[in-house]
Image (cartoon, rainbow, N blue to C red):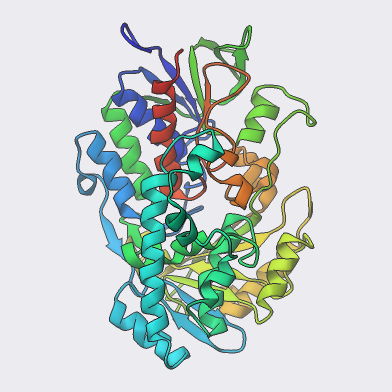
Length: 485
């Protein structure tokens, strides 16, 4: 793509990945139009407003703020001029049904004291864990995560033999944590992040110890106005740069001819010609619904679980839980076996809650609270019908919330998530991060069959989570620049 006017790009879906890709492509000189099926941009990171209560539908905290700062810096802007971050510290509290609890903090002195409370003598292990995970984190982001690479051997050879060993990829996440922590509670807390990667900490690679480390090292934050404050800031930046954004504009089909993209057909019947199309819809959903592939021909990787989410507008303050609380069962391994192998809602019912109004009171009427609860579930194809009422009752009992205090309520099942945002099989976080679904083993951010078709979002490289899909937008733009149209 050297010389001349650069071809216009259609981006299907205005999730964070789609917005990031659009910003980077616009900075590279392309005319960019985003077509969003819903009334609001943001994808999974959407918003519900009712009776003065404001809920973020998906992500509840922001991590790795440097990723977002870099995005705005690339456009010659300051992130802080668009998004105000409120620190959440203490950040996350883990609770077990036996009464044990464990509070995380980015303040090292506070965290060391908390680890000592749970497991006297654990301070050296925590210090060693930080040192080890910091090295993994740097290796991952400097040499692996942010690079487009199709050849697995070339990808791996970016690391020296010593660095490769240092990643801990040969051990499970739980095995890696056992090197540093004797307490099952600390290991279970740090290992629980595996649930959102689509696997068990007893099976996922040890390199994912960078997840709890990254949150502790860079802090957890809530944008003013909720996570949607970040979405609004990114939308504003995109529009200022000249990105056109059309909402309530559902794309019906990606058109191609002779193995080359020719444009998109809208549900309204309109046809738009484009030489380049970036899909922010899950790769399998793009294949099945936008390319018209049959079920047997559509790509179907191993996916992360579904989620059942509740949004409660509560009268008064919720006194017994903080901003972010993760409830873990006593049978921790059994819960992962239930979810990942037995394909059923875990008996112990792990879940988390977020009370964002604790950090930003403007999200609820004065004196009231917003409560968000997320319960991981099997996929739609594995459990087509959930006992929503039964799960709801168990969550309310565990957090001690009286039903009479609930003034506003919404509940989204995995099927609802899939319908709203094109999520394959209702998977909440996209393709899983098993050993052979990371880096060049993951679905590529371009189509091997149709020239001019690219992908962005949780289903492709580098992976799931807000920072990852924002980095992925840059990687997709770089891929387009590197490939001849």
